[in-house]
View 1 (cartoon, rainbow, N blue to C red):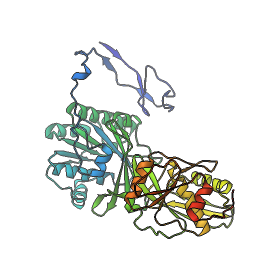
View 2 (view 1 turned 180 degrees about the horizontal axis):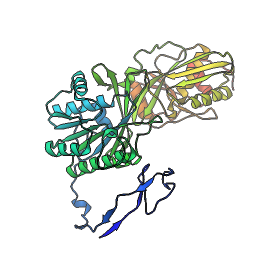
View 3 (view 1 turned 30 degrees about the horizontal axis):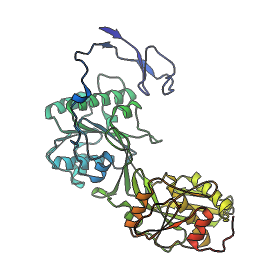
View 4 (view 1 turned 180 degrees about the vertical axis):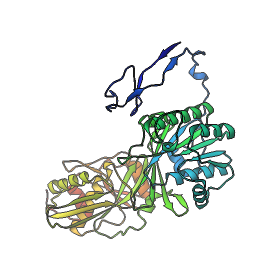
Length: 447
C-alpha cells in the first residue's frame, strides 16, 4: 500500500497532485486545500459480470403524491439520493413532509432529520398537512454522527434531511453550510444510502442566481435533482427534474399551495384558463410544452400610447423575445408599435421558455392594438422566424390533443400541424397570413 496526498478544490471538488492558485476545472481562485491522505488499495474481489449484477428495477416506492411520482418516473428507487432544491417559501419542506406522511401511512418506516426547525414546529406543520403517523419519526439534531447512529438503530426505509446545509460533521473544519461541511456530510449520506439500499431525500437551498447552495459536487454525487419553483404572487408550484439517473428529465409536476399544504393539479391547463374572458381583445390561448407535458396557457397583451421612450414589458417569457416579435410584426405584418408601450403576460404564474409561444404572443399584441378578439374556440401554436414565416414546433400532436380535450375547435399554426380529431387546422405560412386568418382582414395591406 502507498500513501498518497493531494489537493482538492472546495468549489467543485476537483483533485490535483499539487497546490494551484486557480482551479483548472471551475476557474475558482485560492480554492485548493490539502486533501485528507488516503491509501491506494487493491480490490479484494474480482470484477463482477454485468449480467450478474442484481437490479432493483420495478421496486420504486411511491411517494403518495402523483405529481411528484410523475417527475420521479414512478417513485423513489431504493438506494437513490434525491436533492430537493428551491428558493425559500416555495414549499420544499411542506412537500417533503407530505410525501413522508403518505409513505408512512402506506407502511414505510420514515425518518426525518429536521435540523432547521424545532420538533414542535415540525409537528404543527405535520398536523396542518395531514402527515401525522407513528411510522414517521423525527430527530432534531444536526450532528452527522448522531444522525448515523439513529439511522443504524431504527433502520428506516426512507431517510429525509431538511436541510443538508444545516448538517455538521464535528471531525471536519468549517461552519454548517460551508463547502467542506456540505460536501463531506452529503458524501457520507450518499454512501450510507448506497450501502443499505435506502431511499434518501435531501433538501437544499439555492442562491440568488438559482444555483444550489454549497459545492457544485453536491449536485454530482446525488442521483436526482428536483427543482421546486413558482411565482411569489401565485400559489402554483412547479416540480421539475434537473437531473435524474433513473428516468426522464422532461416531466413536469404541478401543485398548488393552500392552507392545508400542497394540492396536486392533475389538469393544469384547465386551471390556467379558468378565469379567461374569451371575447377579450389582446388575448390568445397558446398550446405549449413544458418538457414533455402539454399545457394550454393564456397570453394577454396591452398596447397603449407611449409617454416618453416606448416600453416593452414581458412577464412569463423572455422580454427579448417580445422585442424581436414586435420587430417582425412591423417588418412583416404591416403593424407599427414605434410610439406605443407594449405589455405581454403569460397568465397564471407559469414561465414559458420554448418558441411555440411566438405566434400566440404576436396575435395577442396585434389584437390589443386592433381592439379585436380571436375566436373563442381558437388555439394558437407556432414559432416565428425573422423572415415572418411560421415554423413547425416539437410535440405538435401532444399540444393539439390537449387543445381538443379542452373543447377547442380550431388551431392557427403552420401547415405541418398533424390532423387532430375535433380540431380544424387553419394553416398560415407567414405572420401576415396569421393576422388575416385571426382577425378576418381580407384587405390588410401587404408588408
